[in-house]
Length: 345
Image (cartoon, rainbow, N blue to C red):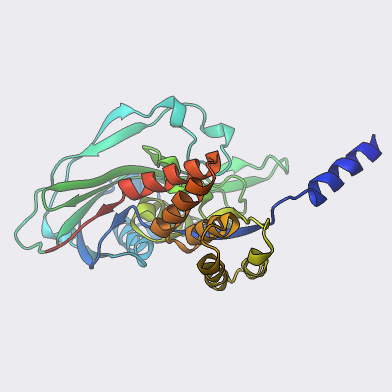
């Protein structure tokens, strides 16, 4: 039996397995603004939840504003605190989330969250005073905010701190609804396996939310640090579609031609722009080279050049029809069609 397994391994290794790279891909934002958009934070409704926060976090509004600004730091959206201006924004619950999509954003799908579906929230057009000059506005409603202890399953008699932050964000342009989303974050201090961030409604699969690179480290064990971590993760989850993100992917390279192998060696060393240039030179000399077209399409996705990747997949599919090329074209078209560009006059 052992000899059979050894033969199978040799066949798989030597029989033409394609080289691959575990890497990150640049994901372009779903909501994009060619120029900076100023957003006024007009309302932060904490309700009774502020009393459950740690002593150093009793200033809930200040910490939420800080977390939002940090989450949107590398985007086209600039947030300004206007909570004292008197603006209002109504946020209210509607239907329950579909049970089929409960765990689409869970990193590990913990069984402790399989109890019930959560409410989806909506918002009404805000009422703003004339003193607010920003193009957009944001309203925040805190549903839950606290820290509890839970038993450690690995060490009997020991307990771990777990943060619970449940916030609804409602983002509006001038007379235009952009996004109303509920984010639940429940990290456990000192444990990555129980880290949990959930979006309601769930993010579409083509946003690659489950492959996110950020917030995969161990959550802090100290009370205040854990709270800060959970709040930042919560705000970051809401900001996910608004910025360029890095997601984990496996890039598989086609090495069936000797002319593309120098580029593959560069790609293995994560020199993707150099690999792109090498394969472009190959394609200039051999316009019908299928390995060069496929590798160029993959490396364009890694570099975030989605339109160029789509063009290479189309050319490859014309030369040789394959389900892989068709599937990648469908995925890229969907991402490009759903993308929204906001122009501010």
